[in-house]
Image (cartoon, rainbow, N blue to C red; front, side, top):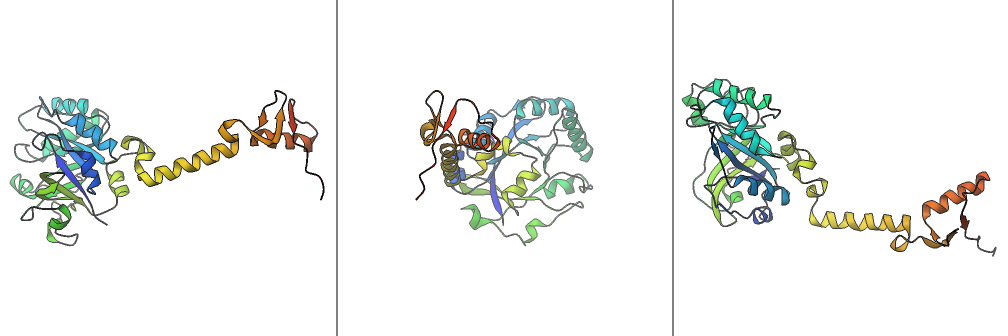
Length: 285
């Protein structure tokens, strides 16, 4: 199974409707948080919150700059990230692999763990083809020609687009920057796995994707609500007022199922709870 997601920033939209993105079948969003030691993407908070609201997995990324202090960059990134997974955008102007790991260490020191690393093959070659075997969540970009729906453009799981490098397999493939999504032409990524597998890779719990209910479809949520309401009524009686056929307590209130069971247990043991009167047994036939 392969799922698709989008990669966006202030350069896209900037008001992409993530509800529509979800309706079109996309399941994750990578969006820009910050760059260098001073730039914060103004679209990030809204995109992050909209992704959560629509059940999309979300990671925020920082564009790493070699001409800025890595500790200052880490502090800027983490301070604006919020409840999302973490991603490094490591490409033109980002420096060498030592800069990459210095930023990872700086983010770790602030209590966050890097989940994804966007390192295009061309940039890896440009910085001397270093070892990437320990890089978390490698994202490679290799674009197909043309534009149109993402599923139609996707080159396939078994193609050379997925070939790893630097001792690391490609975890996520950015295969186009011209996919038609919610009325926009944007970058689209593929993950050759399930939603749950990607969520685990991103280190996201159900609570960081707006709770367990956001992991359910609308139909599943409605079914769950109906079952919970049915269980509540069986335990508490209609409108929570107890069941008349189970008897009444000293205040004349109908007993709940729990009250009635407690009364029966008391009758059996000879210690009936005070203030309850169980319904009389039906006459023998």
